[in-house]
Length: 517
Image (cartoon, rainbow, N blue to C red; front, side, top):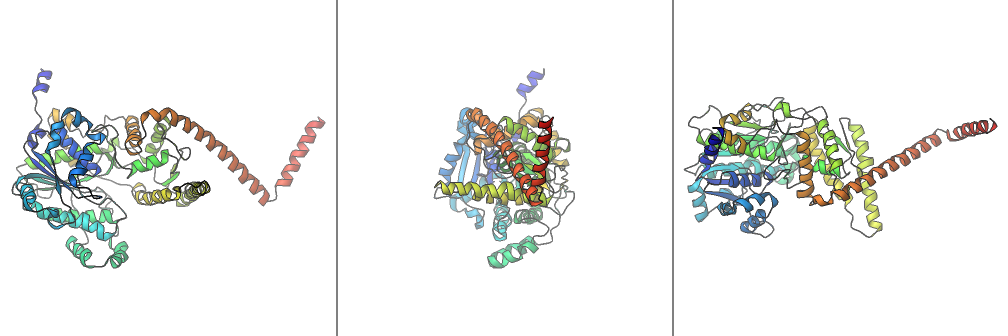
């Protein structure tokens, strides 16, 4: 009987998306590509997906789209459902232009047909200038809203925010909090004020936010909230998004941003120290879990016939029982990295985390910068291109940004998100799974490291035997170096305090005593 039900059961989510025209901004980003792949593969009866794309490096959107289809993440579509790729429609435009840069027949088609919007475009550069962050993240959202107001058949607009946009809240509930600044005032300010003046007032203006990204995303939430209930809007706030657990490929990731960059840097032996409280829980979410959440959120809000009093908000985070501490991530990650090492490491991967800024600073000087300058000096002598100081500079900037989030305790409440699986039938619960409790942590870390290895560093699995031999050599080198350096340090200290001669005399007396016996 169960087999009969499972074979005849239909996907309610797929039924909702059947015949729908979907408009996506930020579709070429990490999350955007995974969203598009999942929609095409699991909701194949949709009518079309408009993806807003701008020309890049002299290449038109159609050409960029062809290259995107060649990525490994689209492999199952190329093999099982190649025909659905025709449903992806690139539209040239940009969230930095009024009307998103759309015009003529393209604009008419998008406005007339679109029923579901996923607004995911944003600058993820934490260190971006405030003018740029406002233009892309805040004003960009306003431009999307302006276009959506003209869509007569719009069922839902899903705005992708971040769980870290309220740094002053000890507990983040699934609601929009007030902001001390009016987003429209900041938009006007960014338009007329010169960049230098704006840069000078930025540090005081964005307090308590650590960067312009979280600040501008907070302002964008106010814009979205103010449109409710006139527009069918909903806010989704993922925590730090990390490589896929299963879909489209286990461990899929296409950039070294965030924790995966730290993991790769540590695995290569380049990162030796990081400011991080090992007792705090890592607020991370695999990209496929987050995307399944977005698709389900749109499904629930788009078919709902009743409206809540306040704008719906979903904090997309793992359940409390599944969260690892940063210390556990480090120790388990080391175990996996030793078994599946990266190629051509700079040093043996044995980095540490600390909350002591003095210890961290000393570690950075002796284990990051001095080796970087030494390697570049060797490159100079050999007539090769220097690279290590440049890499360390990028790593240092990345650590400074990420360490704000790893040295603070975050409390994200996600009752709305955790209730989503209960709105799905058993088939959709499997197809659009948001369940992490059954995921084996060590197995997931293995997928993550192998994903970074294959998809970011382009290191094939066939190189693992060679990498393991290199790791053993680095281990021996690490031990020898520590012994030599320890010996030199002891020798220097003995000389500084005048203890060398008394120590030699003591050994000589013992040697004479032994010979006499």
